[in-house]
Length: 79
Image (cartoon, rainbow, N blue to C red; front, side, top):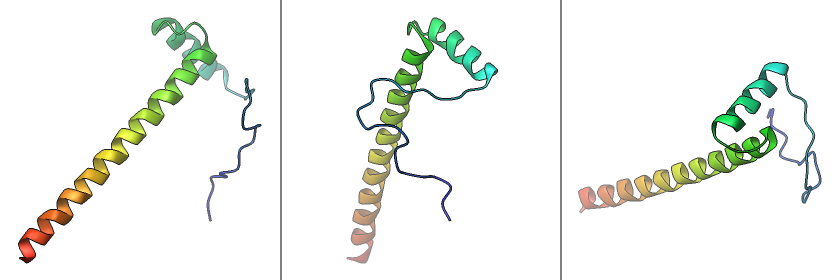
């Protein structure tokens, strides 16, 4: 059973999103927006999501490259 619902809960091309957050989350996002000069907590969240996506894609590419290298190494050992 999966706890993640992959269906979007908002319109695909929405220009803004509304979500619930605890007070401490809002405070942290506001402080981080100021610290990293992102303008608003919404801008900080968008930047953080972009950064997370970039990091996940980089990790996936590195994993793929590692798997290719390991398969090449296995073939060399079989020869």
